[in-house]
Amino acid sequence: MPFLYPVCAREGDVWELRLLGDARSARRFSARILRLCVEKGFSVTRAEEVRTAVSEAFSNALRHGHGGHPDLPILVRAWEDGEALFVEVQDGGRGIREVPPLPDLSRKMAGQERPSGWGVSLMRSFATEVTFIIRRPTGHLVRLRFEPEAPNSPVTPTILTVEGE
Image 1 (cartoon, one colour):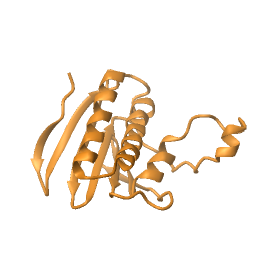
Image 2 (image 1 turned 180 degrees about the vertical axis):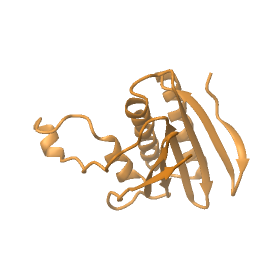
Image 3 (image 1 turned 90 degrees about the horizontal axis):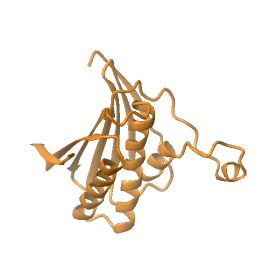
Image 4 (image 1 turned 60 degrees about the vertical axis):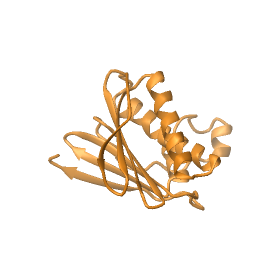
């Protein structure tokens, strides 16, 4: 059974969670992120935005990083630093090669663009920082930073490659 536990201290606790990519684990994880946000004092609306962005990162780790194999673990860490909440989602995949363009809602609704592809866009819209870290050869990590207020416009993510980890 998955669980969340403090693993060390900084300016607060760092929570680490190892999940398998099944629906039950995803729901528990999603509920815990929501509770963290509310405990931190984020508005309910903002907490839902954070949960949505982090759930998309988890979904992408399962779908793209692990090729849909629910038996491979996904590591999630969360910690606070001042007013900010940081969440990392790590998988064993190759990582993102380039940042996809923001979707065109009217083209998607008209069927001119594929219906998927919202995950990174939602992360960019709700997080105040988005960093994709490709850790060769060990996998891929998405680090999201959330402030109490959402950004006014989608942020531009950073892609970093770290060799030899």
